[in-house]
Amino acid sequence: MEQKQLQPPSAAFIGASWLALCTGITAFLIGLWNADMLLNEKGYYFTVLMFGLFSAISVQKAVRDQLEGIPVTNMYYGIAWFTTILCIVLLTVGLWNADLQKSEKGFYAMSFILSVFAAIAVQKNTRDAKMAQPKEQQPF
Image 1 (cartoon, helix red, strand yellow):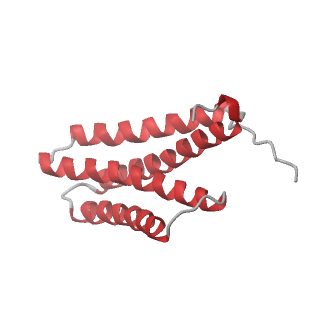
Image 2 (tube, rainbow, N blue to C red):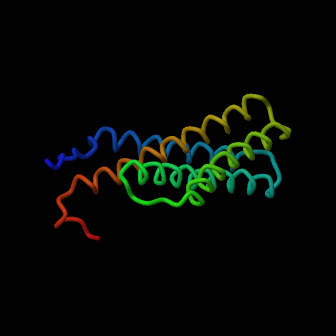
């Protein structure tokens, strides 16, 4: 069988992904910093953001591993999806019950979604770039 040569992601796509990730996280954090809410509320939203980023990357990795024939347990796969959905539900419930203007709620929701999507793209680019390297150049 012929081995298919993988192409690394373009520099433009890598840059755009990192820019989107940094923009989303920075916007969310600046919004929290300037928000007129208690410190425990700020901590809640910060934790949901970090939890969401990790969960989304975990789902992307599990799905990609399965597509490439790398074994993934059903338990891990299910937990990854559950935690991703859970963090979205936690953000939604938190914003629904928050004493914020609708524009602020929309700001947090959009910067969260941008950050999560960009984190998936950055992880995909990192993996694709590593897989496109010849085996002798890979560090591990």
